[in-house]
Length: 504
Ligand SMILES: [Zn+2]
Image (cartoon, rainbow, N blue to C red; front, side, top):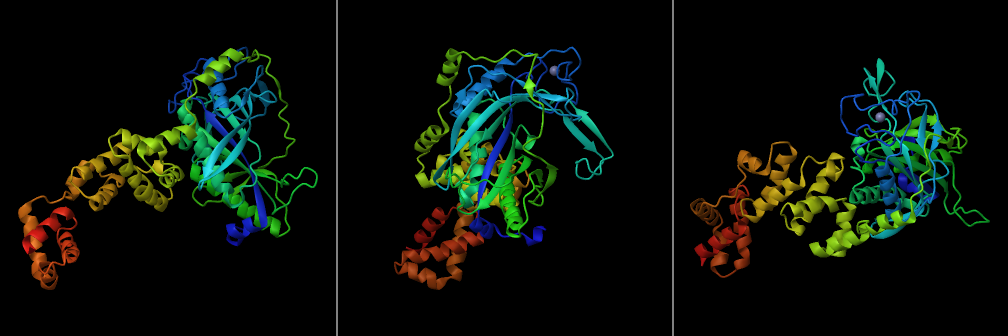
């Protein structure tokens, strides 16, 4: 059906989207949520397990205090209330990668609730309301071996790695985001990006979406444009789908856009939306059906009998609140002032998701304006061409700073710098090595420059005559000829000086 989908513009002209975002964040604690096993990404399968996280009979869980602290700090940073007393609950269902046959989570007593996070899209601020942030544990990981896609379909056999089972998770759930209209997918992306930056600032998770330490479920529904409940006046919510485990910022936006088009196409044709989970495919940009999901899915929640309630004292919560880092908005204002960027420049930097990259590039010695120029203009374009996020480009802030240092020292100019970027991105090594291997350094040999200037004058006698007559502006044509002759590897300012010296 994808070939017959409505366009996004058509879809959004007829329907209002409502979104709910559920973000799972793995906490970077030293140990797991309910046992002393180490949390270490990439360890040999099943080397970080014990009777508790394997769910063996008789094993008893103990709550990780550091994880509770992180959960409270996240709640406070999201402007939430912090529960005075709350319990864990058992969420019962069977999955082969969940050996206890229940997940220890929180149900009707989350640690944090009723908060908000402001996000910016095109200079406009949207307030995303946070319903709750609760603590739970991650499941293990199934590896499907033998198939082409890594999915269970077509696989010869499956293996389970329980290293991830029991890693502390925080699930952050928004209230329905309505009123964003055509910007809804961009708001979803900006929300996840802002949340990621906030969590980085709190130093509670490494928030690597590509490694799954932060993942997002995108709930989306459509209602006819302008429809409102006659009693409450609130927007009507249609039947929603839940696109699971979207693992990049770009995919969050694409998945939301796709669902808008898909659902609008069905609704316009008089069909109804099936309430279900869906999977997003990075390669094709489409979502496909997962399993049907009703609101009445019965997980038989009940309070976890093996764990004492969590009752953080108000003094401790106040202490944690006082020690929170400066809020993102203020941090950005401080950075903007320190960098001397205009509002528009800073807005572009935020939109390009380049704040952290520029911060690191400046820390590595680049001027803020140069760092901005390379990341926002040059590298954002290349990332878009490759269909990847800026941070996923194979170049580091230190390498960008090193290229700018070569420009600052006069070894290369901006035009040559672009070729150095080509080389670094192509995996040809560090900037210095690329300059040497590709022979990109500016020719500072005065003799060679002088000869090139003489050649340009000889082949453009009419231009030379104008300059001799005092029309200095004509020098541009000769500079261009010299630069071409030198394959761009000359200092244009020095070339100009030489031309004027020779023709005065
Ligand atoms: Zn364990």
